[in-house]
Length: 372
Image (cartoon, rainbow, N blue to C red; front, side, top):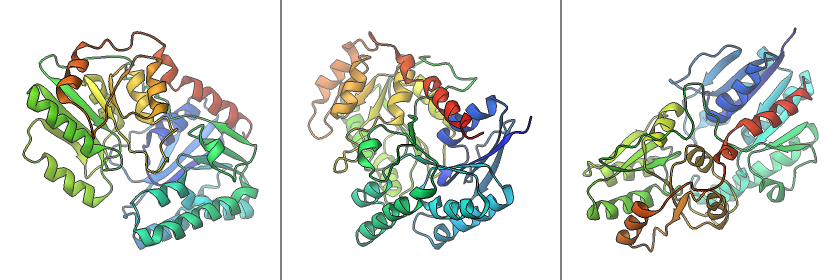
């Protein structure tokens, strides 16, 4: 049986990105119906997988000239591979995929993982003078490519209301936790001699890393068993420099990553050995108000208690499992918080299997069946 050739492509995500590889790639490869090709940022952590080929690129920084020309290098890869279905999950590949479809045909799927234009406007990743022009250009590309996009995949339900360019051909496929064969969900193995706190994901000021450090320091002053493990990658140099300065004299704070990508299996191991996980991502003028963060799915699927910013959407999500303690990083009493952490019973209700990838996998395969 001839397999449908599929490309899943990104500019800044690594080729072993959990959504591109562990969720989309492996789910499709299991059916033996697809020839999967993943294009993304180079990663040293890639594991070979039957039915999946990797095409790494980079390195380059977010504001470099290399980033501007990289989409056209990816276009050349598309021409060489001749995929029948292309799934792009970054706005930077919309124009080159648009031209590929005009010249060679095939199906064009836009996997929207962020409200990219809003993120550019509301965060400090780019210089202030560039934010509005860049955001306008991103939204223009999304409108211009709309006539040739066969289907939209949305990682968040809120995008249905936020994104005006969407067509009716769309499917919500959330970033739920996809355990790998060697991973056991809801497996807890914390060290009883410590109170291990955990921060995972992108390391940045806007994601709450420095709030997590401040809370940890306050708790450690009361109980020396409190420790913090930070696992993730920091893309912004100024945040990485500040991070090293904040933790350099504190042996109860451990960093895995920072200047390099961390394999997802190490993140999962850290989740399963921790006592509490931080979710303190800042609102950023409403950008994150109604998003269900990937780490919320990962933490709840593994039944890790959460120290949670008082975001109504996240509070409602965690309440169904009794999963979290609310904390305001700017106004909290360390003694009271520590007492709650020691006395609260977590995960006494609900079914955390709802945070697993299986339901989303079915939606993905049903969608791909329409294009193969």
